Length: 326
Image (tube, rainbow, N blue to C red; front, side, top):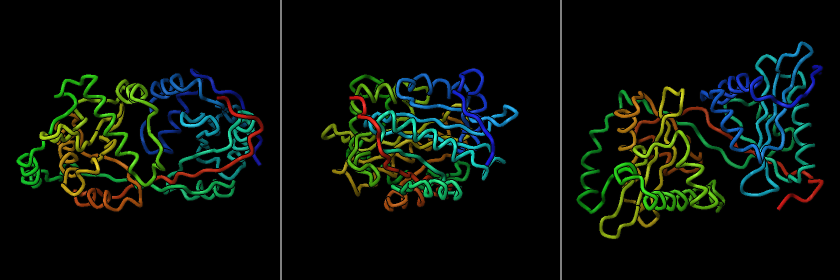
């Protein structure tokens, strides 16, 4: 076992290295500035953030534990080991540290996400007692070869049937429009197989903070379909381009259950993809979807999306040493 020592992470000293390791192991570019912003936003819920160093003082890994917004007894964590340092006990020492601290903090359930193309990490988590809860698959679309014109007849048919296709930006990005966007986001998210009936946001105010006030939020990329006859927001598809990324990302596509079977998901997705190509200036789009949501996967595949690495969500119940804070 490698001889390492743990110390608290320091913002200016360590976050550049942390951002680099996040970028390597998560497959998405993460900047030091973005990671610092994330830390400051969640600082009140962060339980542990420790750097593992070898005898030469070089970082070989870290753990980062944050209490969930949805339950004081739940926490999610990152545990990463620098490539080339695997199999030397670094991960076990980092995990033992984070679980001990989580127990003292009143945590009884730990959650972690692991890429499905990293079987060693999944085996490591399973060996610690973590159980798979869900599996999402990665998807990618080449916008250069994407023939969106072939969907024009279907979109025009929906317009003739009374649907207005627009964006939050075109609607003025008002508080009233954001509230309707929140409601559609929330209700369609709760219908997902992986949602377990749990709200993604605690309230409309929480939605504004966690979505509308983020630097990645682009009102023009929030596409919606509105039933002109009833005024109901029937469908939506959100897209963005994260800082430093060369591709766009489909955030969420959802259809009000009263409008299922009308090809609205396909229509708003196509409009979001057009926005990505013309306004975000990208040549590809990524997203992820629940591996068991076959109807949504069928829509993506019909549009031409191909598979990328996905994510296993795993959980473990631990013995809390104290009652969690209220």
